Length: 573
Figure (cartoon, helix red, strand yellow):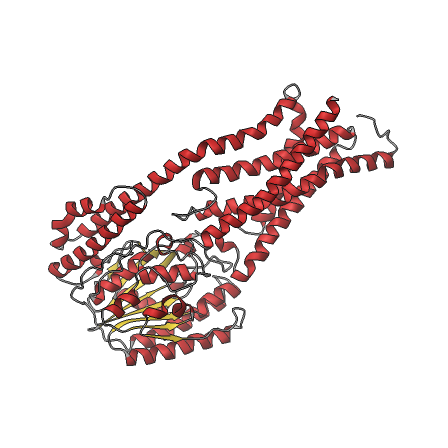
């Protein structure tokens, strides 16, 4: 009777593991969709601020797609612009993909605010942006570049000059032709529009990084080609009327991908030269600062959902003008963050911070806006963190229960815990195999791991296969190690191995669940941990389902070896 109960218990555990594998499939889909289909809760209708005195008649923003900071420092034209203008490094947000980055550049709103989290976003962008403000202000707004800009900002643009792209795997000369065509169209646009906002986007560098790597000769050659085009475009600008900004939407890892958290992906150049620009080397800023800075140069109202700040310290202007621009920006940020606090269920705070700095801001005091902005951002981060920790407190009991319930299995072994060491050792062997396959290929817990969107499905299918192979190899080694044991003991070892493997994965999943939940409605989670969470769930799928096969297979292997060696089938040893 006791033997029958033990068998039934072991079979029940296998069924539970299979159920966990099925549930993991559902959770992977839910987690993926909640990022891809993320809907921002922060796009409230807010009143725009006032215009201010323009410092330049025309702002020309050039984006060199995927230009790494180190590669930018090898470009002679850009280096000359650095010497003559403002030289900065800006930090990109996550996910560091194209459409999200473009939206940050044009709106000053991070991905969590704009709702543009992937390249599958269906436009137009709902966050307030430079194109829309220029249109409402009666200024031309022009974009020259890939079709994505028209998808995202088409309704707001005076003219979208689209440069069609070949397949990404096209040879270098095809992408060189695209950049040359971009230069030609950009040159014509500069001749046509003598005022307003003009955005020019070169894409060949990004394709070369994807195809050949972020440190390849092909990538640098195309960057140098684009640098030459920038030099020719600079000759069309009037330093007494125009301001030029050159930046990148993201960088690339050495093998070519982006989207993740790596420093070479997140840190990109920003060079500003022209009318009212104070030359010099400045401290690191953020990509969200670009939109309000452009608005400040053109004297336009700031995008109402912007979280960045105008870089007043690099502008040559009187204290009165800077004070006016600083107050306009402060009023916009205060209105946004009070609405932000309300959305998160907290009391408004930005008005109080503004009151503290109002006189200093209005006077144009150097550094006052930076201090105001830092305090405002810190208070906003504190409110977000407070809400996160409240939700974590509520999730903690569920996480702890799910973590401790599987340990009830150990009650069966309270007098013979040592017998669990062997299946535990082989569960650790599974982890060693799986991680060796993953990290041994040079991957990391990062969206940069897959080089192109076309590789995403194959990448995750490979991770499923890695988990299946690792589990099967470790399980078969356990079966071979246990062939002398009685059939029930071998079966029990295989079940314990499966349970320990699944339990280790469960603990990692539960840590992420406690920190961030399994779906995300009002924030984007830490995407490094999020990527790991997704891989952990994927591991559980083959581990759960293959547990049903492994345990009887282990018994069959032991029986076969005994028959081959002519050992009594019911013998011990």
